[in-house]
Length: 229
Image: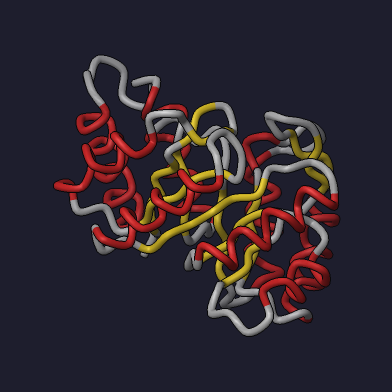
């Protein structure tokens, strides 16, 4: 299982994202991302350049709530050249925007709404969306499991895993403890994102600083991966 560090708080890229990415560069993280809102486009472009310079895979997650804003964000992702685009629900239109690029696309399963985003939908809804996205040749799905309002989060993860086969399942949002990381590994997630819990130093209470929090998240990921290879 992979850990994706998001330079975000409350579903927005943080204003000091450039300083943060420079701070974490010595840690050797392999997966780093940001949201499509919170800072200007020029900052996102520079942020992506610094993520790639540190040798990491780059992720941009779409949290815009309207179709027009989502497509503008997809266009921005193509212009920036991120490795992976997460989120969004207008799959056909986004794929058309990404045509000709090497970007891997992971749309939201379920029914995301609001900002910060919550997730409506049942396990059956999530499984149906996963099958639909596979039929459209998406790389996998982005699942806001711990933002669920109508279902048990791990039931959603298990439903997605069963429907996706070998395709990639990324769980994003409110992964705020080592226990949740372990539970996600057991349920079949391939990767998870953490932003706020690291920046607010709540993932590992008592550990001060972003580096210490990231070390705890990496350790939790490694332990969960060993327990559920």
